[in-house]
Image 1 (cartoon, one colour):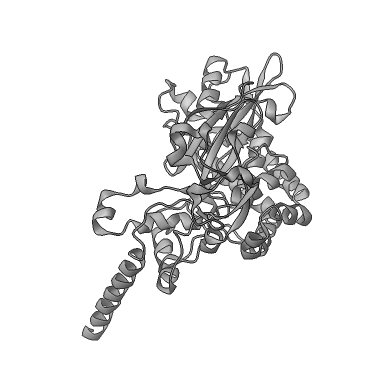
Image 2: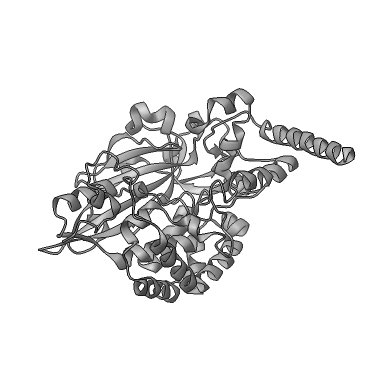
Length: 425
């Protein structure tokens, strides 16, 4: 018995040493992209070039111990140099103006506006999770456990998801990968936003003309959609089929982080009624890849059931059901779930999936493309079963008793808070 206890003590000590060694392998909490072609970046006139060779981030490079303890994740994708087009804001259509800096917890962003009211955003590819690091983690020197978690996100997932969305006939924000050099138009934002890698995409609010859809004149966030519903409960509805399709699509791409602030709504005026069509945004967690001893322990199903690695099969579907789903989808017919699952299977052919991943730079596709394609095809083939389980789980959930994230300031009755259609007459 003593030998067993001694062995356990030794194992705990070794585990602690390896953990601390892994977490202390880098002291940085944030870094931007690395520009490979030029040694003195501040002396370069980027107007002479149309593209630049950059690595999204070398912050997540790992030795053998770190790879075992904290996983391989997408470290290679983050560190692999790719050619990216250079963007000067003066070259964008519509006399772009900078409105304000975004307030995301990890993503640095700038909100832009065209003369016609169309809103766009520059969203940083590199993330800054330092605001999420607890003081106790800083004191103990283990903040890297949070910082390094970003390596589980694929830096270029969003552009593949956008192409897949087009095949699936789901609205998307049309993200484009760009390098933004320091420039006069950035003014006071140069130090924070100049010489960085971004996704340039449309916003999920404002003018809807960029969608090119009839009768769609505006975009609103979830809170504003709820306000419209409170004002005209029997006039405002949502496109149930489109929402079910969008959520089943999330299952296909493994995007587990789909709370209410990550949706916009295209408002379609139909005369005597308003139809809201979902517009998903923020695809940071699509194809999420969680590996290694520490991430596996931290994301254990009992603690964080929603945090799931992208595999060929969904590990725990109940963990992916959010309050957003209960609020908007609990009363939708199971026939719609089956119909939209089969429609996605029809639209997302092998060729559609393969051509969507082909939008990646060849260096990135060589790292992750074939494996992710195989996983997605398997999920597509099982989608009808997943749709049935999704609906079954929704039915078993109780109605909400708290407001959705971002809607806490709305004054709603219990019925209005419970679900989107609970107050309809």
